[in-house]
Image (tube, one colour):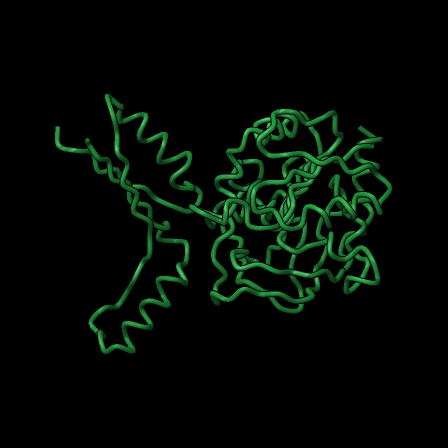
Length: 223
Length: 79
């Protein structure tokens, strides 16, 4: 099982994402944004960071990188894709996920351990959790406020597309406490908090984040 | 060289905390007659040769603005 982690100029958490992939029991594959070759990976993680310095809009320029055209094509055929933080912003900008991430309502960068509720335990990236399960992983962002038009939010709630929600305090003013959303087919998931920073007792507030990376092993085998 | 100007602003229904922070600062400076601020982006494109309005709209809507949250205004050079 090979899981690609794409590095963009300005990515920060690609090494941690690769480490989480390895701890989950898969082989991490280093991918470079400017290439046009997914190297036969079974799934892709878009890591956190500040691709292109967040110029224009967070994730906007990375979403138009050569490798992203391949990711969009394969995702539309069902390849699992996880976007974390900046990766979530890239997925929204690429049109693979609905909505957008904007400047935090309080204008501050927020960095803390965050309690989340898993709302959907049947996506490619969350099947090792149970619906309603609460987990604690770090959150760290300045532009993490999830927004969409009111009618779009109603539609997303109706379709059960909210995958993860903030509980015990909303760190950035995201509408309806939305921390992460999923594609219609449940194969693409994006979230602002960082499960890859919560995979080892030594460095994280918990090991709650590992489930994202173990879930996808079954999603690919089962496909 | 002809220039095309593209203005990008958040849609009215998307809250703009940066604009609100600017409004707060204006109030502290005594400019209480200003009652609202929306912050946006202003792009000036130098254009060589012919470019259609369709091309410019595509540029504006696929890269310069995110149509999910932003509106664009194109200002073309006088023909």
